[in-house]
Structure formats: C-alpha cells, structure tokens
Image (cartoon, rainbow, N blue to C red; front, side, top):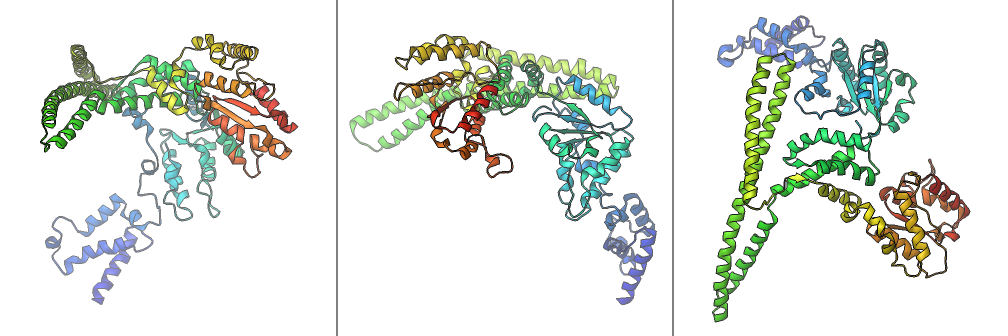
Length: 595
C-alpha cells in the first residue's frame, strides 16, 4: 500500500510539471490514480466508456484547461466566459426581439454614436430622470467573499472587452454604482479599475444614471467624470409620448392578447402628465397602458358576469331544493316542482352561455396565436436579411407571412360574424375609460372627474359653490380665479389660486373651501387642513416644510410638503392663520409666489 501510494505521488509530482501546475491539486491525484488503475485491475473492465491512456489524459487536459480549472490559483475566473456570466448580451436580445424599439431621442442616439467613434475618451454617459431611457454590477459582487475576488472578476471582464478590438461596447446601467463598488479592506473600487482603460480608448463604455446620482457620485470623482462625455436625455413632451406609445402598443397587444385603441394611448399620455406628478414620461404612460391591458386580459380569462350570475342563481335554487326535498307539506312539494322547472331553464341557459363564451374565447385565442406566429416570422425574416440570405427572406415574406396574414384575416372575420350573430360576452379593446379607471386607482381622483369635460365643469362652477348660502361675492371671486387658471392666463408653476377668507366665526369660510375641494376633485377628502395655531413658536416652522439637511427628521419631510407631494391635487386650508409665527408667513410667501 505504501509503495503504491508513493508511486502515485511521484507520478503526480512529475505530472504537475507537464501540466504546468505550481501545486499538486486533488484533481491531478485523481487523474493519475485512474491512470494507475491498470496496475491492479483491468481498466477496460472498470471503465469501458473512458479512454485512460496517459497521452489522452494529457491532450484532454491541454484542450480543456484542466490545469487552470483545477488549480483555482492561477486565474480564478479564467475557466468562465466572464461576459456571459456577469453580463447580458443586449445585441442578442435585440436580435431575438426581446427589447422594445427606441422611438424618439434621435439627437441623443446620434450624439452617442459620435462619441463612440472618437479615438480616446469615447465613453458617453446618458443622464436623465428615471423612466426616460448590460453589465450587472451586482452579479460581479455576489459571491465575492474574499478581498480581491471582485477585482479579479472585473479585470477578466475588462480584458475580454479590450481584446475584442472594439467589437464589444460595454453598457453599465446605474453607472454611479461603480464608484466604491467592491472597495473593502483597502481594495480598489470599480471606478479606479475602469479609469486607465477609459482614458486610453481601449474600452468603449456607455453609462446610464440619473441627474441626482451623477451629481452625488460621479462629479465627486473628477478623474472619472472627465473620461465620460455627458449626453442629457430629457423628458419627452406629451405629443412625443403619444408617438412613443403608438410605436410600442403592438408589443403590448401581442403580450396581453388584446387590442389597444388610439384614444387609450392619448388618454394615457395626457392623464399621466396631468395627474401623476411624482414620475416621468414616457414611463408612467407606458405603465398605465400596460396595467389597463393586464386588467382587460384578466377579465377575458375570468368567467363573464352573465354566466357568473346564472351559476349563482343555480346554486341558490339547488340549496333551496335540498332543504325542501324531505318536506311532506303540499306547499313545499308545489314549490319543489317549480324549483325543478326553474332549474331546468337555468341549466339550459348556463349551457348556452358556456358554449358561447368558450367559442368566443377560442376564436380570440386563435387570433392571438396567429399574431404571435407572424411576430416570430418577422424576426426570422429580419435575421435572414441581416445575413443576406435573400432566398430565405423572400420565402418567408412572400410565402409564410402572406399565408399567416390570410389566416389572421379569416379568423378576425369569423370572430366578427360570431359577434354579429349574437351578443358579445368578452371585450378585447382597451379604451380611454380603462385608462381613466387605472389613473383613478393610482391617484384617488374619482373617474367621473377625469372623464367630465372641463368646459362643462367651468360653466356650472357657481351653481356648485352656491351651496355656501349668502356669500355670492366670495363665490364669484373664487369662480373667476379658477376660470382664469384653466384658461391658461395664470403662471403654471404657481398654485391655481390663493385666497384669504376673512370674517367672523361661522359665516362659511371653511365650508367654501370644502365646496371648492369637492368641485375640483369630486371629494371633500381632497381638503388638507393645517391648524396654524400649532406653529406659534419660531422653532416649529421646520415642522411645516421639514428639517434642514443634517438635522434629525430631515428624511421624514414636513407636514405640508409630504401631504402635497403624495396628493398634489388637493386644496390646502391654513386655518387660524393669524396665530402663526411671522417666519411662517415668510415660508408661505415663497410657496405662493414660486410654487
């Protein structure tokens, strides 16, 4: 046993030199143990499927990098395709149609291409608010337990990118995370590892971050900042957002299996811009369309209301029938016979409705499957055109695609004829009403207020406010101010109007504010009442707008600012205003003047 073990270790020691390994790992011992198995047993009998010749083991090791894979000390990341492990191939995702098309931002795209073609410092950083616009820095950090693991991983990624001779462009989303990433125990962070290659032009990198994060992290490192060229990506207008939605709606129609009307797209852009103030276009408008389509899809897959009502009626009669079954009274038997007749009618109706629902749903499912097949063929055709396989592209375009389009027209015609023959139980189109319902759920503004014409509301304004009896002059002044604001004659950044209601207790000052909130937002809960008697001391002013930076409570915000931030469409009532400290008036002067 000792002699065999000694021979095994001698072979491993000599083999490590052949295999270019500084140590004798357990994998080498196992490999030479398998090779020496012929000294005791017949290797063909033990391992009939494996070639254990010494020359084959060496050649297999050379071709598969067993040394580096088993050592784990020369190059801990060498055995992986680092870019595939830690990043996403966005080009491949786009080739497979997994990315949404980019609509608009033509200037920003040309600017990025221009920067990428530079000889040095060819690294654009796209700056903008969240929702306007990969290498995952988090996956590089996950599992990096020991000091130096992160650096080795990032160096391997950068080495692969640099060796591609410009064929790989590195995109780092949330690029501000590279500042300080992995810097523990004196180790270098990702930003310092990137700087040399960024400056020499060996690495083409596109970064994306928000304005706040760019100022907070990137600008504090001038050496890193000068290696990137800023490309500001601004928020699109409502008109541009509508164009973006029109370009994207086919993707969402295909995903949800529904149709999205153009009026729904316009409503999503207009209502989100007007009522959702804490997010940015086009992100919030796209989310509205997405959620409205998901809601309609859920209604399609759920049981229709008509069929559900019939099922509930049948269940109710079945329970009554069971309770009367063992009753011997004459009236009970008469009622039982009537129940059986009613049940027979309801069950027949249930059968007809179920068949109608299933047939309509199957036709809609058929249309969706054809659309998915058309989308797949379009992607395949684009791939063939990129590869200059013109025969395959022509076959798909003039053969397969035209056949699928004929099938789609026939299926849509069948569905239309089916609905004309009887009433439709399923709705497949997202309308502006669906968008208004989602906005109402997000903001708490009643849907009737979102759909009502602005002109109709302004015409009847005095009639609504005249519930405050005896204050005709105040009502007219309030109504005129609201009309001026709605006509666009007031400063858009300021509040709609600011009123000082003065008078003795009980004449209707607070009631007029409630009536105004009820008119503007269809609910008196939109009135935010702040008792100014709580702000009689100078140091209490911070409670109104929040503590200054560095003080306790800075993150919590103020009593006024937080309420208005969460519900910007509200009426703010400063009650008992004369009791507030003079510093409060200075704050209110800024708020009412600048907004």
